[in-house]
Amino acid sequence: MHILIGQPKQETDLQQLRRDITAYPDIDIVLYPEGYCRQTDLATLCQLAKQYTTMIVTGYRDADRLDRALIINEHGEVVLDRAKTPEAGPLYQPSTVDDDGQRYGYLLCREIFLGLDGLKKETVELIFNPIGVGMFSPEQYAEWSGEAARISRQQSAIVIGTSHADGSYRNCGFSIPTAFAYDATGEAIFLSKDDRRTRILDTVKNTVTVIDSLIENRT
Image 1: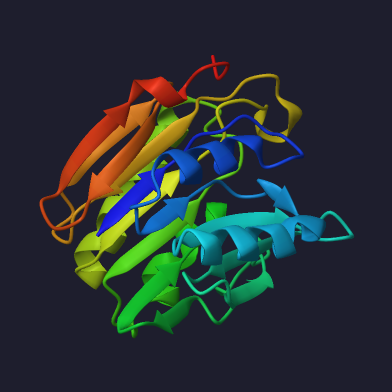
Image 2: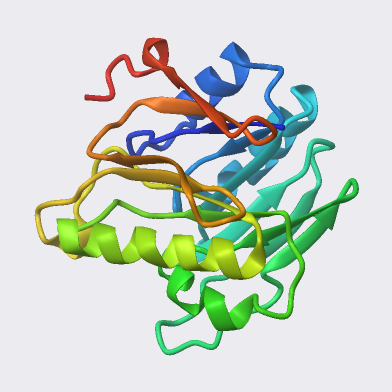
């Protein structure tokens, strides 16, 4: 399986996702950050997923500007759409979905800190962690990526996360763009900190291709 892991700028017209999915029509999944799109973009995302037979995993803001989890399968069908769990938890369900013989887990941004308990009874092959605007400190980055490693070991699953390339964590004026992937043993396949480049992950070989050609206007 080939997964395109994007760190786009925040935008309102899906420009970067359109460019990525068009440039790499043979990928199986596009993973984009939390809150990348709006509720009004869902029909367009479904059309793109169906047109390119590519699953789209991201998050969107509803009409009340509240964050929601989103997975659209390669047939253009919404297979996961739920609200983000409040910080107090427990993890909202469903946080897993079955599609075409694969079972996926989904943790929206800070839900990763609820994942050890929220997913422990589930059997999944791959867990997505769309993140908003990145980390506010190196210490938060280490804590976040460490939690992803623990979940991957507990679940014996690949865990992949990505944030936007820009933005400010809770309006603090600063954030560190973040992307990562851990294999099913908790070993890092790649760890990206303050590196906005797009990557394509091969989940069979556990290898990563860095795509420089897609970062135009992202820095």
